[in-house]
Image (cartoon, rainbow, N blue to C red; front, side):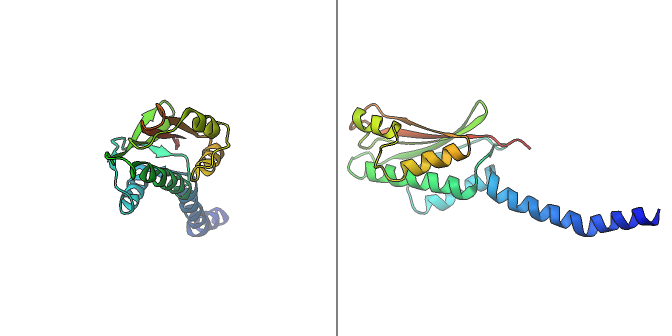
Amino acid sequence: MKGAKNIITFFRNNIRLIIDEMFDVLEHSIYVNHQKLNELVVELGKKYRFEYSFNEKEATLKISYEDLKSCLDNLLVNAMKSVSQVKDKDIQLKVFKCDKYICLSICDKGGGISSIKMKEIKDGKSTGHGLKDIQDIMSRWNGMLDIQSEGQGLGAQFTLKIKMFRF
């Protein structure tokens, strides 16, 4: 009986601390919750001007914070370049649920993407700012990058589809 109490005491004093530390590490390396997403948007909002809307409080994304930040940062850089040459400089970041995914969509009314350039992007031959990196990150996390544009001069929409994390 005394041995069992010693094991329980050891577990409470040592093993539990290790488990809590491991959970903290995992928390920052494999998912982004609603609060962290909002913190990231606020941080990016200091560098870029965009409108943001998101209402899903329970949403947790299965991606590291740094990878998500890198993807959004690259897409916002591209959007800023695109709208720099047009009158309507609005950029929107919309976040919404779609089946088992959380989608983060960046829309602009900038220069758009020609059909030739769109084919290059989809074939992985794009020279665009970081698009290959974004596609690689999305692939690593079993997510997707969807790109829509009606053509040159008609704006573009880039949507990250990231799996929801289930506890």
